[in-house]
Length: 162
Image (cartoon, rainbow, N blue to C red; front, side):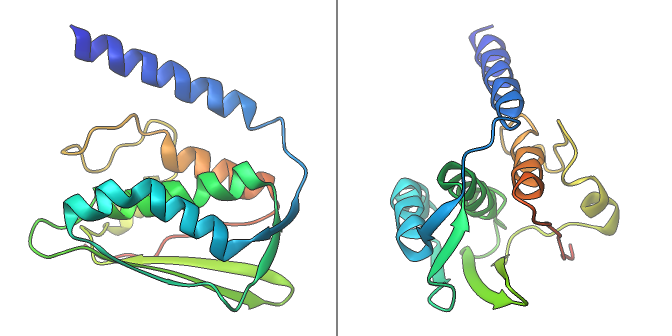
């Protein structure tokens, strides 16, 4: 019973976060490397527990214009998902890269995790979509990431194979 209550409270918290997405923070010039290092520190226990290798190459972007909470949430969610949905058959390897392209910043997260079929890729950013049920979650994280990215004027895509 406690687990169901905890999941319900977590879902309510996520729905509150979704409603707050409409209240956008003002973009500022952020040091991307510092922000990513901050997220890495938050993920340190998970990185250690999974024996993951996280490679970061964001020097090409330097400072980026974005709302701090927005960019932090996006980076945190993408990296934590790459670790949570790792393959049980190999140590996780995750790479975060940044490339300035045509006046925009392209962030790429690449991992050697479970992968997704084309059908799963089409569903990935839907609200309450959970494509790998062996990991606890509410199915809200990537929906929020997509909304945050789009509210900031960006786009998010996925390329994967099972």
